[in-house]
Length: 85
Image 1 (cartoon, rainbow, N blue to C red):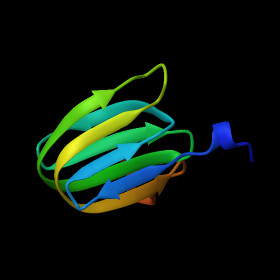
Image 2: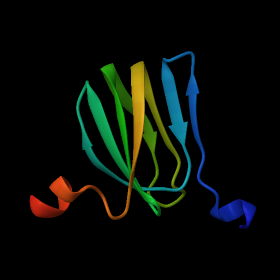
Image 3: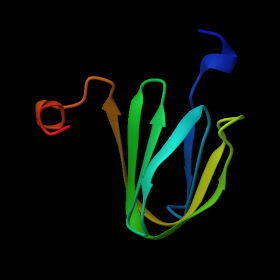
Image 4: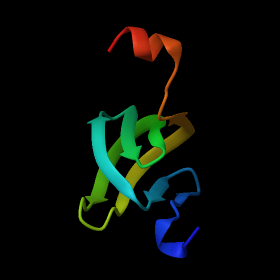
């Protein structure tokens, strides 16, 4: 895999999340962010979260807040997600 194709996600002190290769922000609220990337979706949970940067062209994403969890969901998703689309 080439370096330019790699996806990265970094959490700093549970207060800042940055990511690369993000295709879109599917939903956002102060308690949850849902991001899409080539491998599926990323769900970031926390409180007082705010998006500070997102560029669809470069795929760079950043948000601040109290980060408590990150969950990756593959492209196939769960059976529940497939049934309730």
